Image 1 (tube, rainbow, N blue to C red):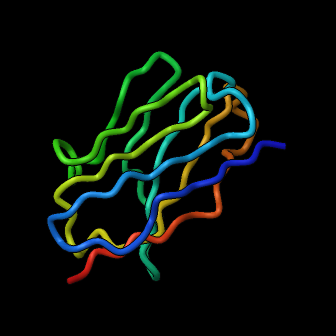
Image 2: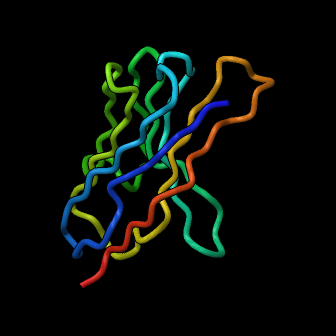
Image 3: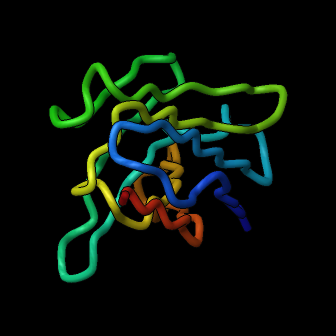
Length: 118
C-alpha cells in the first residue's frame, strides 16, 4: 500500500509564499506522475500541477508563472512552491500519485490546509 504524506500548509497573507511537500512511502519513480490538486468545500477537486516520470511539468492556467512543482527522488518527495498567493486559493491541497497501471486507482494523501488571508 502506498502512503503519501503532505506537509507545509498553513496561514499566509495574500501575496505571500508557501512551499508544500509530499513524501511517498516508495520511490516516486514507481509512479507515472505525481501531482498536486486542491479542493474548496462545495467544489470539485482541481489539478494544480503535475510532473511526470520524464520530468515534464503541467500547470493549471491560473497558477502558471506563480507555482512550481519539483521533486527530490532521493527523498521520495515532491514539492509545490506557491508564490503570490491569492485569497481565492484557500483550499485543501492534496498530493496525488498516478500508477503506470491504468487499472490502478490513483493514490491520495490526506491533504493539507492552505489559508490565504490577511
